[in-house]
Length: 437
Image (tube, rainbow, N blue to C red; front, side):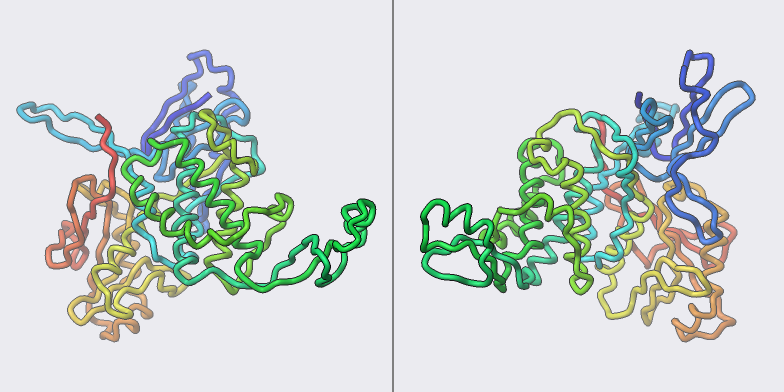
């Protein structure tokens, strides 16, 4: 049974509604996403109980599908936010729900270092799978886009060459080592006395890693061809990625042993390969290593969550890189005093501590804890040393938040001040939306 939550929205479960699983609902969320810098757990959704026999679920800013009561009830958190608009000619406010185009956000961060994007998703393979409608599967397309972005980086640099094992039944020659058991069965017992089954090493691109990447690419193409409407709004970008990558694998063999796929290990010297293999394994495991599974309309997926605040942070990082192209002008995740700052902007005209907050509340309000946090960052000695300025000078702070309005770009010449706070500003940036009609 599914409970649908919207990002940062409450949901109430009452005991008198005849809910037979009410008592089995845990007291706290059984999933811990990560811990904050003080060691406090961060949950994808909060669980609280009232004295009136009611359980309240409060979604955070994480999307996915997670068990509430294993095998019986699961929570599905959609990538949606509410957008309040005043209807023309009416004094009443109406709520308009808009869906976040998380795939377009992911596509927009192409080119960032793979190590910055590897913690965007968490999958619980050891837990019972959750059955949902194919169109509600946010896990599979996210993994596929991640893989395609990495694959583009790989083919742009050139496919890796290495030694790989070849086993072949050669005629009138011997190369490498004769595989005696197979040679007897395939040749000697059939009176093929000039043939020999040999195993030898070759150097080139047709290695196990590249054959694995081609296998995953075939699964993605099959999924896209059988679900043409699934990537609406992003179809062109994904088609361009597939068209760009596919020709590089034309000379790569399609033959690969499934058992070898499961045992495939990555090479840390090739970081794109390492991350692409990790995600590729997730994709093949998602379809049970069977390409016919890509055509199913009802799917069983493992519990998972996607870190939308982290995705928004990377989305902002890419926008900052595009705006400030100078070397070293934007520093990402400066570590100081056991704290990681989101961004430092260091240009001759502007020296600023920047924090990305995935909270639309800043459109017309503020969060005091966030203000205290970014103010604390601006008091760190490491920040003053980075900017090479005197410690008696107050450093500007900026909070960048997601705006549900269209065409809002970063404009450092026109920042909004946060009332009652000196040198602390806010700036909204438009995020991709799918408007529901």
